[in-house]
Amino acid sequence: MAARSATAREGKSPKVEGKSQKAESRPQRSPLELDRLIHERLRLGIVSALAVNDSLTFNDLKRLLETTDGNLSVHARKLEEAQYILCTKSFEGRLPKTEYRLTAAGRRALERYLDHMEALIQAMRER
Image (cartoon, rainbow, N blue to C red; front, top):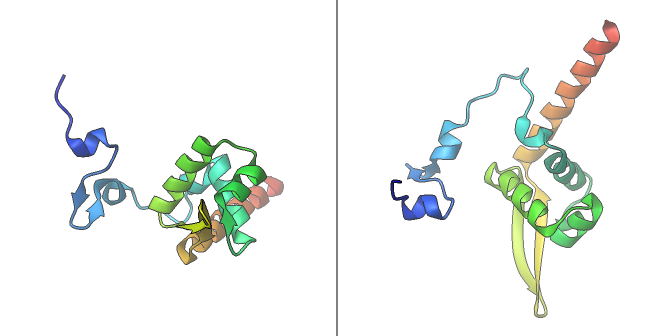
């Protein structure tokens, strides 16, 4: 078995000119393609909840979406890496507080996703 680099062991994508290879290799979608990043149930829930709230804490999202810490953390990180949401960590007294906000790019992605879904629904109704 070949030895993995420290970057690969840590689960990080190697950097290429300031960008990760993961972002570089992400294929460009045509306007007619579904955004698979948002389409996943929990990520759609996160983006939708943030679209109607200025911000939500990690615990607020966890309760609202009825999910586990680990599941929410993984999906929120994917949205953060895509720059759809912004994560801010702070302390209230001695307790850590993680807060999420929808970015402008995230709002645009949600709008495109909703437009796409509306077009699919309309096409099916016309059949």
